[in-house]
Image 1 (tube, one colour):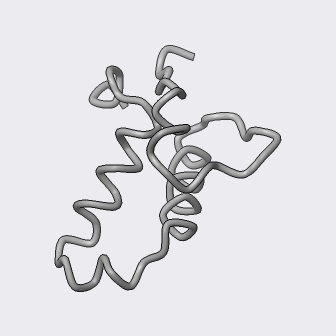
Image 2 (image 1 turned 60 degrees about the vertical axis):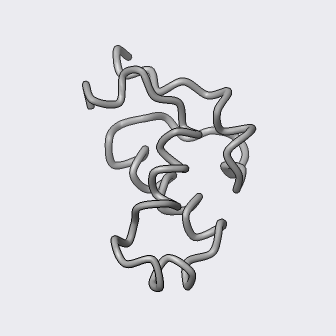
Image 3 (image 1 turned 90 degrees about the vertical axis):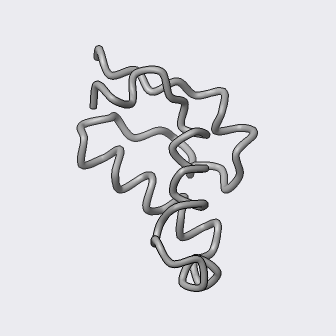
Length: 71
């Protein structure tokens, strides 16, 4: 969690979409919605509170949400 301190949700979303899964061909098979769902799952499993709406599926709006790990 401490490694995420300077990151926004956009940074994490971008990491997921550009580096996960490690093989580029397999990344083409994962939709932006799937990545947003994976991000939401990761946040939930790390104790972040759920929001009132689904996470956006692109970098720009997610980049406005800081990863506050000092909760």
